[in-house]
Image (tube, helix red, strand yellow):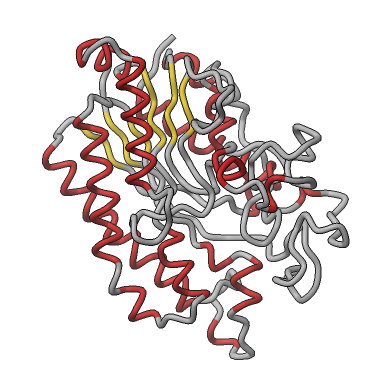
Length: 342
């Protein structure tokens, strides 16, 4: 069996991908013969853990989920997420949330929690907690270490996106860029420790997305709006805040290189192409259709009639269509790097 490990920073969906769909790869990963997928992360990947922890969260009610489930299903989008498309491409059922007592877990488990962080001091369901859940699950489903290793060889691990919220919370609390940069080493260390822990427990195929340039999203463009035209780049993203994301990803790449030296059979790829539509589909007010006092899900907040034409769903999260195009890119890359054959 071909064995390799991956750490793949995520490509942000560009307008080009929305206008020119790539060739279909809806079942491309079936050739990889994955038997299970495991996913820790944050709201980009959460399929229902957060709404169990916090039933009052906005993602627990319509219009979230309206375009796929016709009901809120725990996903902070109008429909499916990237992990859903990846599971479908692998020929597996959608991943149930770990905290769902009625979940079916034979094909994998989703441990991601919306709003989670890499550092355990910031949120209760941090990356460390999610890994504790993961290995507690393995301890109850594997007969022994040999049995677990055999199962994990046939599994795909999608680890993240994670770490972005560590900076996001600080931004909205009014912390300076220098203050946020000061936590970078702790955030990177937490992520690297998680990678090593997963590898140490027998995982052989890992995809690790890096952080998105979230400051191109309507929520950030609204909150940190300035009349200074020089503050924006050619994609109308705030340069100073985007530099923070790039600062994080630069150091993340260094940490990945360190892991690569310790595991010579690891393949590493980095891709980043930040472009974005600027308005949210579900929200209203302001230049970016975003108003923090009128959250998506409230009775008086409208939803656009054509969410398939938007990248941003609620100002913070992407639409199903945007996740579909991002997933297509990732699926194609996973397939090529894993060298899966029929």
